[in-house]
Length: 67
Image (tube, rainbow, N blue to C red; front, side, top):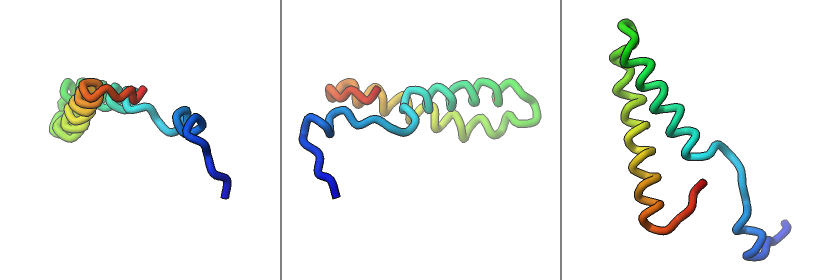
């Protein structure tokens, strides 16, 4: 197995960005809230939106750059 140095580990990228995932959840919340049939599902995506926004704010306050 290859071992990475500290400089290499600082720049590992992959997966979906947390800001993009949060944006998708917030957009889905707005869309579902204004649809009559699927409006009850807006609570589930709204929770994901709120948690994502809180996490981004918390990590920013801690000095972590997650983007």
